[in-house]
Length: 154
Picture 1 (cartoon, rainbow, N blue to C red):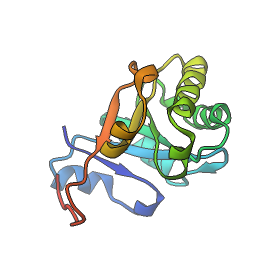
Picture 2 (picture 1 turned 135 degrees about the horizontal axis):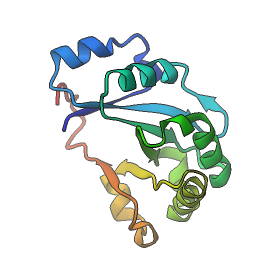
Picture 3 (picture 1 turned 60 degrees about the vertical axis):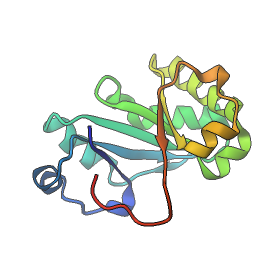
Picture 4 (picture 1 turned 180 degrees about the vertical axis):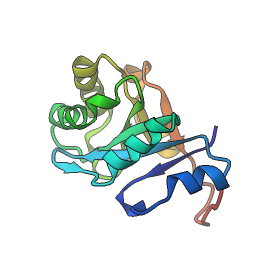
């Protein structure tokens, strides 16, 4: 399946055109970050995708603050997506300093609130550099960039 992920950087994207002109199966939308940010484009994109019965995911960009507080923020803003979208934790940048123990706390807190286990998004190097043994129940979405050249299409 071919998916794209979108955040407020893609404000103005025409989802209808994207699905008509690309081999696109679904979209993953950035919903929240840290304990306060919400994507201003999220609600409109989520509405369009669900109205058009498109596969989708929603993600939280981890800041590495209090894991339970970040999970609560993500849940509060996306609880209407439960059962309609895959919840995903984007684990990179500053959050990496917290380690997979932080990820486990986030996943556990989110599961307690929602009854759903988050997928984890991270780079291939993070998989090799950290201990994931306590997170085997979480599906992984692993970014693998072969080099620094841009990749266009799918």
